[in-house]
Amino acid sequence: MTTLDTSQMCSHLQKKLFDADGLYHGLWTALQDDPELTAVVRSRQLHIYRNGKKVLVLAGKSAPKIIREDRICKMLPANMNK
Image 1 (cartoon, one colour):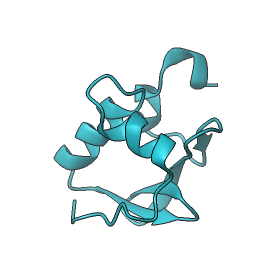
Image 2 (spheres, one colour):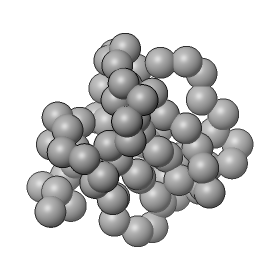
Image 3 (tube, rainbow, N blue to C red):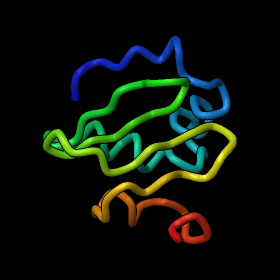
Image 4 (cartoon, rainbow, N blue to C red):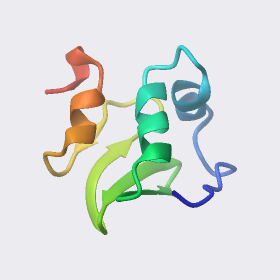
């Protein structure tokens, strides 16, 4: 994945992604390791794409929005994966 400009990202989301004990930290490491995944910050949220197709939107305070079923969505905490 290319570098991501996090300056416009919600601070709550930054904590969830980048803190080692954050809810989405596993997703963040998966993004780094999977060349098919890309991410863009839009409206303070993280939009995740696989091969150019949007699969997931992460926000700081609201629940994640699954756009398409994808293996990355299975990495969400169990109570959010619905």
